[in-house]
Image (tube, rainbow, N blue to C red; front, side):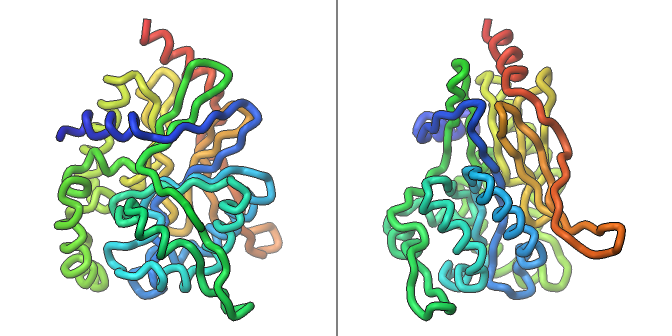
Amino acid sequence: MGVNKRLTNVMTSSIRIPFNDYSRFIIMSDCHRGNGGFSDNFSNNQNIFFAALQYYYEREFTYIELGDGDELWENRKIETIINTHSDAFWLMSQFYREGRFHMLYGNHDIVKREPKYTKTKCKSFFCDSINSHVPLFPNITMSEGLILDYMEAPYQIFLTHGHQADILNDTFWRLSRFLVRYLWRPLELIGIRDPTSAAKNSERKSKVEKRLAGWSMKNNQMIITGHTHRPVFPKPDEVLCFNDGSCVHPRCITGIEITNGSLSLIKWAIMTRDDRSLYVGKVVLEGPVRIDEYIKKTLKEAV
């Protein structure tokens, strides 16, 4: 099955969420939460992630995790990951409890697509502070795609992880997982990068991005993905293919905000005040750009 058909099939089967100019979304992906060991790329940014998510929780954002939230290629048990990063999972469970959380799966956590897996592994977790199990994501449904329906105009935003444009990490994901788990993970610990990874190989990254942009242009459809870890925020007169980046950049995390009917590419990082004290702060890298501006371009091309 070709890239275009794979992406189209995902979009066709995606759940739909209506939104308007008063809606607030934060979209992040590729956290790759691990077991806290040397290969856990999330550990360095875990405090930044928690502070950012706390900011969005207090301001009533809906959190959309766009795949590869958990590193389940290198690690076999999600229970170990949840226990290691229990503070992050606790906060995500608060979003979920209030109906403000959507988790999509990517290639590195594709096992979440099995209802039996999520029902048994993501139902609850053990909280050390109260010495008992507490609800995590009971009855959650993990999706491969999500559509945000803009209520102000006949317009929609398609969200998916983006691995569908990378055949090695989609159709042959079991082979890729085997190689990562038993070959590239040990080599990564001594500084050798995985050449099959779109996130770590610039040539593969560019190919995946071109395929995603090609689908977006062919279908005249705005799409937001992750997978390559490289943030992309096009202007209204460019191909409407966005990328939220990742949560495992060196010293920062990136994401896409949707607020007041506009989109922005943002970065969270540890910053320094004038008195040299440290704090976690947000920087707007691109935008905000009104969704109306993208609608005008889309409708013009559709004529």
